[in-house]
Length: 286
Image (cartoon, rainbow, N blue to C red):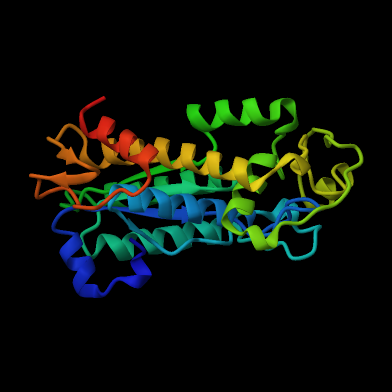
């Protein structure tokens, strides 16, 4: 359920059954010769919407510009300073806290965001801890990288082996191809698998990795593989989201993918068979 497509009346009603919300966060940066500049935001957004559909959860608008200063040597890349991104995340979370949301589940598409988002969580918690004797609403934040779970890691290894790399990977490019098949690009790669290494600022990155890739061969990506990676990520993150939001509370009996006999759980049809199996397992306490 996309937050921007709901009315305030619907959001208020949803808060009576769940205090959780999913926030996709990515980046707008180069992804080599064939990867869309929006790859990180696209992956986070489509996977977050899949989790939202499976879990019956609200999904906030995608935070599409992240901390990507090291990519500014490539045309089209954009960045926020770490301090700016922290301020944006604090304001977004506090706005939603004011309406009654308590659990903020960030699905991340960009490794460069991790340190800054974690720092933003610390700022959010510190602001609630410092006022002496403050009686504040409980707030918890969680960051999950869509590619860092057992299911996706195993599948990426099976599909690409050592050609997965760490930037402009075939996995992330494949997810964009699944999401936007009309935007698939092609180009020659020399060498097929890019070199690996370290970097500091934008000039250092461009000097060490002139075509933008790090250790990867995105030419291996296909939309069919993207669908498999999407399904694996949605299944893993749906289970994680449900167990985190509902904790040890009694979770609902599932009947053909619909939550029943539980007023505290969103009644949402799960259309994807694989995801339905995972949600059923999660709500059974597996």
